[in-house]
Image (tube, rainbow, N blue to C red):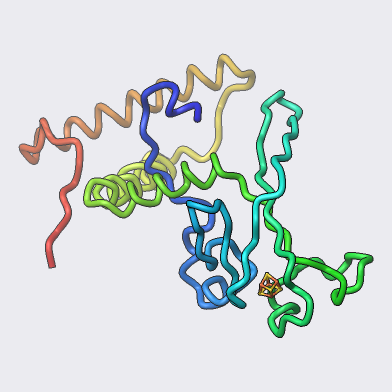
Length: 196
Ligand code: SF4
């Protein structure tokens, strides 16, 4: 939301990006990601073909003062469902599983941004930027630690450490510019994708 309000785009892998490709995640029938959503009735359809309908919106305030909103959906037909044990989580719940119904707590704003972010990182531009981040940012740390032998700060205190970091970054950039001039690669800041 902050980036959105400041007219910036993120190209950051969603936190569930890696795990979402795993079979265990894809087969988890209790996840909203594996249920169909019906926009018209604002409800989810589960593995049993039952509806999880909107019940209410729950708001909570974090320590920083941010008010988050969760939309709650509930299924009323879980009784005798053969998938109940797979679908309903929370083994520590005091209510016996036979008496429980599936409840979903959905952070719609978060899901919206996550979906948009995923779409961006999978686009050609997103792939190009991700590759460059791993080459350039990670590579820079490696160069500073291994080639420039920077293993620890020589000074103490926030402002001194900041000054040392700026000097280090300047040295790194001069090196980088020198290499680019030698290779005739000035004017390009991204490594292009190699086509197979
Ligand atoms: S437990 Fe309820 S929500 Fe889950 S699959 Fe069965 S009927 Fe659907």
